[in-house]
Image 1: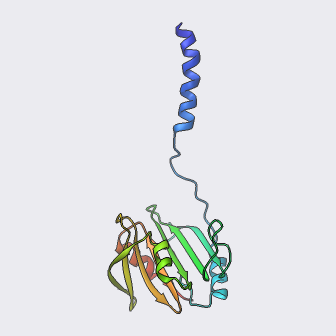
Image 2: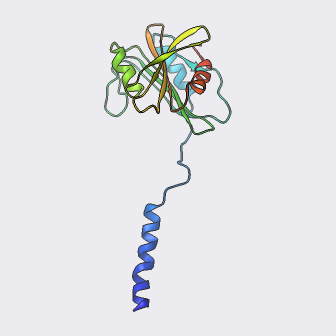
Image 3: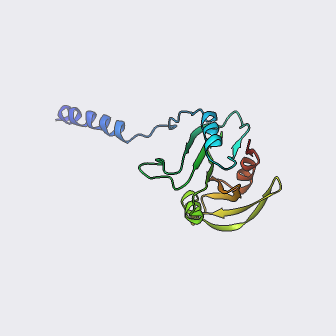
Length: 172
């Protein structure tokens, strides 16, 4: 009886182990973000923010630009010229810069910042950014107008790290 039970239980335990374990680190392949910056800067019609340099332990994980009316995420259509660049820091924190010149500025900000609300201001390199925080307090954002577009810098971290990232951003 014990052998019969072992014949059933051992494969069952192996199957449970295989299908319930989680990988230690998700595999995220880096993307080449510089061509996307060039595309955005040539087509956007507004000054595109991007870092000149990033720390060596940061991994670029998202870089995309689409013209107004083009296909954005999934099957949505971009309401404006839209730019997004995201990095995963060495501390596994996702930080991104997003820009668009779409007409519904408040809807755009809400979609990028997880329906955040104002939380003060920060001055970075002489520019005033509006601080925003999501309803659950997890996501912090910095928002300002940049040459006819709305720029949003967003991360799941505190404002000091977010402000440091924003300091790396330039329009050329």
